Length: 164
Image: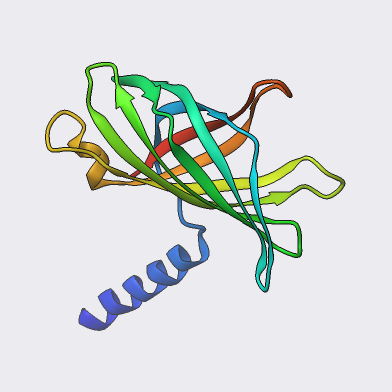
């Protein structure tokens, strides 16, 4: 009996191992439109070109949370020799009810072959005060980065999902 059960579990386990895992569940949290100033170029370094993109303001909105992006943050970037860009943004958002939350968003942008935006994903983390938005401190998030604004009003669209 024990041998038959072990054999059955082994067969079931082997079949399950061949099936791909289900996709990670994710729920939309909010979308930001971050307004940008011209890049501050540091220049070439041994690892690539360093630059900073100042964040001058913006807005965000999602189910149960909305507000504005406070001026003063920046996206510190490393443009690598292959054209991909490591992003490391730090800034504050303020909810409509006055709560200030720190955002740290780290990711990579890889141009599509032939130009344009290809892979552009990041992993934001939040530092929210205890209270209404404390849930932001207790989860993993992913974000998709895309263009927004125009030539005269540069901006970036950041769409954020909670994983799990």
